Image (cartoon, rainbow, N blue to C red):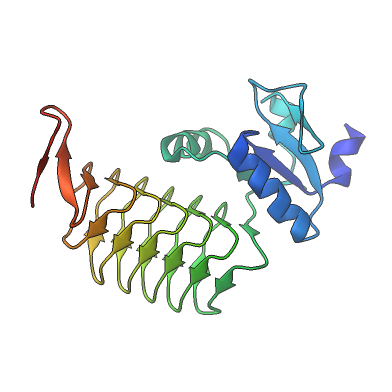
Length: 214
């Protein structure tokens, strides 16, 4: 186990999302031990070994972890199951206000912009070229997809997912466990557990496979 203590990061999840984060850590001159992923254990990913989710890999006091999994609910389950010491992964090209706050485990990818007084919760993903404007609040386990734009004073509840290229108007409140479809334009508040799609965004009624304007 002596080799473990020469490195400083372990990524939990060796899928495509994890590969991107591994390169972010490299660009920040962080040392990376490898990945934890039960399904891919024994493989090499981006030149790093994949370890099983064994107890001795999940109890290293001098190693920081990032949950490198895109699914919000899965990140939440793992976070609640294990008591890990989490770090941050921020791409050098991201622009982040000195007055913004990012909690542990969150990831900010290339070209993203986080403006003043933004608050980002635990284990959030700010994906490639997304824009989070002033005074937005993202609760824990939120995923903002590539190219999505949140105007000022937007609130996004825990475990919600804003799709690729979506736009959210100023002051909008999006509840927890919501999905905003790719390219949607959100002009009204979105209740908890709701999926909205389209321009302007409308509620998707999955049972009847149609839209409900709200």
